[in-house]
Length: 346
Ligand SMILES: [Fe+2]
Image 1 (cartoon, rainbow, N blue to C red):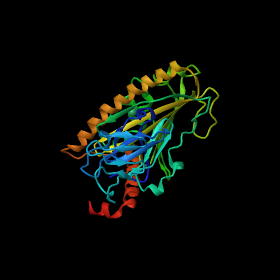
Image 2 (image 1 turned 120 degrees about the horizontal axis):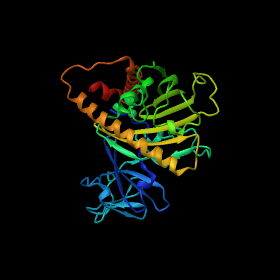
Image 3 (image 1 turned 90 degrees about the vertical axis):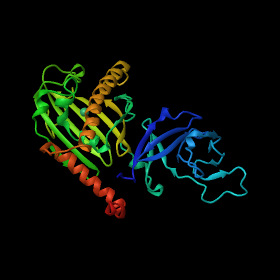
Image 4 (image 1 turned 60 degrees about the vertical axis):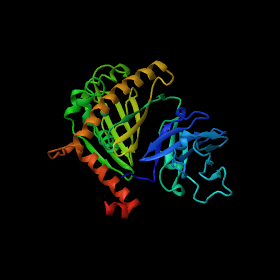
């Protein structure tokens, strides 16, 4: 089950080229993306109402799509504009169209009631466009797991100690206690680790020598978008509520998870940092390290999905699961509120 009334990332903007039909799958629904002549992206149900051939196998004609089977043609609102050989267009000859918005280099599609689509609800990226901040534009990957294993993972700062030993992890990450904050739009799990060794991924970029205080802020907002903040300051200058030292290292990692279906998740990301804004080499190094670390997550989460789907003995929950479980419970309530009859029937 998925939350429908929400924006989900459907693709990077460059993945939808001019004059090309791009099939994507979100929340179990097949959708075709394309650009009209003025460059605006349209999203239509990817199935001709005649014999359900994917429209993505057809052709772009002006601002419309022509089905590759019998030439039925649809405009970017999903209205049928032509049925070759028919005297009039049957009123059922239409496909669903989805609201789309381009932001942060990503194409966001609204999967619920179009009347509720509000672009102010797209995930806010705090320092976007700030010339003092650098961006390493991310990539995407497909995970063979339910999207909620990803939201679990991104509400779990402790996993870095075992999954990412060569990058994000350090010894302190094994034992330092976690705090959980439940808000109206999501859940945050966080902690400060005081006077610890910097983790290998970040160490070369710190503006100070020696040990550090490190904050991990893992925040996932409904239904499945996350900001992971990494904060490093010189040892014994950090802590909750204290002003950040002038040499602070800040990295905001944005993570957008789109359920493809119950068993697959498309994962998009980029990172922003408070230094070296125009340094392409730094961006490249971050991009490569992040990709490596996220591949480590992918291997674990794909196997977790399989393990949980085929379990023959009960699994257990630990104290570290408080945040992820709260998130799952609240999201389930939101999904139920969208469609109470359907949930009750299952
Ligand atoms: Fe991870």
